[in-house]
View 1 (tube, rainbow, N blue to C red):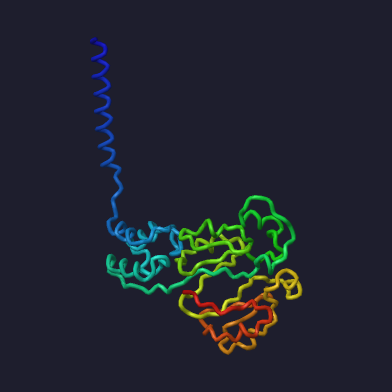
View 2: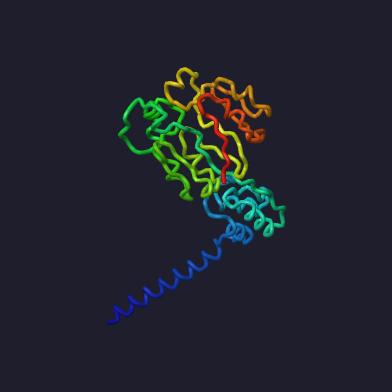
Length: 267
């Protein structure tokens, strides 16, 4: 009986000493709480997308609190409303976040794009693209296996006939889909403004492009010639539009013989 009591006492003493040690350690090694950073973090949407240029919401909040940045308008998903909340906490000026939405610049759906092989591997754009550039003849277009769908935290993307399509009303411009696309064909465009968009990223010569996709840009320069605002140029056989210069007049759309340019108004 005495041995049992002795064992219980020893265990209790050890537990008390260990508890005291942990209590002291928690005080000694406690990490100071940055209350300002925590308040800023509560304002942010929590997507941790990195569109702000930092590691995530925590990184952006800490940078604002430490004075590493004074730009309150870096959070695209939060928009101007979050910028105003951050400004109220930090005393900085509230910036305006220009509403944007992502667009897939490709029309290589199953009726337009030709295929060179039947892919039966892992259903991933990144994986499929490693095999001869993907199953489609056009190695620049949408692979259509949904890496962007998986990456989108707002359920804004669906696959339609072999090409990803984005709902601008659900998109928050977090750029997660942009980062996930192995072809680099997802871009951000201004919301509520009519802009011309080249729905193609094919950089092959026109003759080859026509064999690969019915709606591919052939670099004919007709869009460049009709644009009065110097908003369109052809780089490596594919047209590009400067959204800052484009006024959405539609001249390039009308001039394009392949229907590769469309006037898009998101939202």
